[in-house]
Image 1 (cartoon, rainbow, N blue to C red):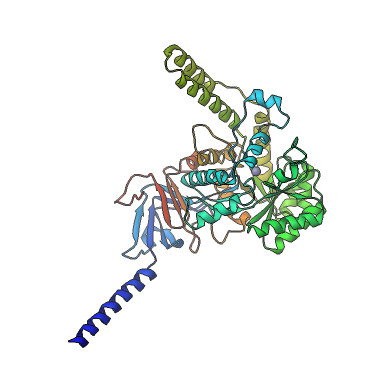
Image 2: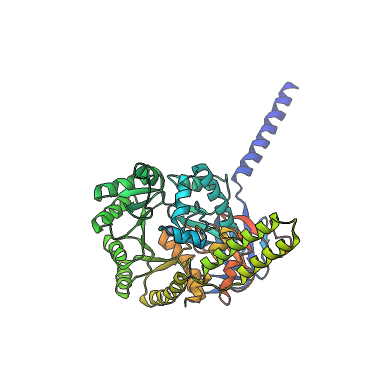
Length: 482
Ligand SMILES: [Zn+2]
């Protein structure tokens, strides 16, 4: 009797073990079906299309009739929607939230629209900043941006910590390539600091380059924080020798170097020192584009202020204040109406700042020259601005269609934020395309993004790492997960 009980117990335990082992080894399989799938690399459209996903990776892609999904695959049916690879913002600052100062305030300061908010951010608690970054990261992901390259303005380790928290599943967000602190020369960015405290303040946000040895040391300090990329701001104070030292030290650790360079001299410094990408590049000449093409240096376009973006932000902030003020005056109906009317007038007004007009003109010419030159290009938003009435992700995705307005084809715009961006980041083996072996980062829009590039601002379905983040498409056969 005792022997029999023993046999029963052993058999029971064996069954449980086997079940557990099976549960652990089962990788979830998902079949995503959609009316269309756009391959940015070739421009080809598969219709109707299907993507078979095993765990967090894409296993098969093709016409629905040929995909051959196993019977136990979970199906996500997106109806007529168009599938695209998850979007990549290759230049952003998730831990910064610049509120554009009122025009009167700007006129009374020498340091423009950016520096007062930057100083405030540096002085604020790093914990507060990283939580702000977490909010922006979630908003980015919800808008369809599944990977970002965060190029500075994160304190000492804000972006590397946010990256790791997202990786560990603590907070939702895109995968992040983090640069840690920006390498700058003395005199960039911030003036008029208290001289007794200046170095201590600057070190919260930047690493100073002063000679080739300190340039190498700065890279090593960032390596110690486990960064994914090195960001340098080039200006007339930075020498080719210093930047070449940065590039050599970074490449030794297989890190790419992204160089902020706007004027001709800085762009030439970046080219001569062998940078991997030039950020912004506003004043690049045709000759420099040719040199960049021959050396394989990427131009990362950042059309942030294209199309009166700052006017929209500025008007939004004023309207927001007026509406709040009107609310406070609710006892007086007449005043409330007056302020609401004023807010409306501000939103409808058509005033345009000079620098935005010139930036729009600059982009029209820059984009066309870039396309003609054959230089490799990608695009980033340079987002770091408080965007009244919208999320940070909505502000970011509003920037990509402006490249089309500046003369880039819809397909090239999509390449700039998928396949091209992946190559610039050095992650072309992982992201940027819907291909077998790549991470399962997908987005879907309900229209045709080639016919209307503004579809990129209306992403309706987001999947990152094989997990559905968001699905606002109509429910098909119970496939509409949320
Ligand atoms: Zn930037």
